[in-house]
Length: 237
Image (cartoon, rainbow, N blue to C red; front, side):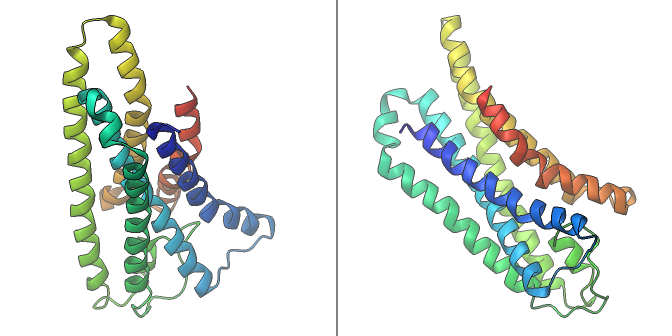
């Protein structure tokens, strides 16, 4: 019932949801030797995947704030991070992910597709769907992606600044035991954030010269499957 474990519960639900959106359909297609997915199922998969992944990023940002208050303002921790505040922040993370996914999905699937109906990925990924769109019709979604990149970068700056202040405060702790306890509270979260951001950034910002069907598949597995699967192990340790 502490804030850290409350947020971990939400993180585990988001991880379970994100990995359940892509992997079961891929496994069933392999077992039945098919690559088909209906239009409505593709739209649902896109919505759910974006919803869970964006909500997770928002939640990781909230968890960075939780660690910041715990380390840098410990005397105010019980007041700032009370149960009502934790519920509001978790609800804001889920709600922002829902609105973000709804906006992306509605924009993406309102674009006419002129380049066939074959998605070059093991799940319905927005960049792969945009490759099928008419050349003059995907600019709306591209603009939305630019705005999204700015929002994600803002969250990234917030996380970095939080950890700069956290490590500055930790290094001032006189006892080695106190520093070890503080680091043990923060390093799992930092490892999860690093894994999430590094794989996602490489997937969407890698140079076009490196793009190939095999590499795109590997990178998609790295950012969509590996972080949700590894997060429980990181926090268990």
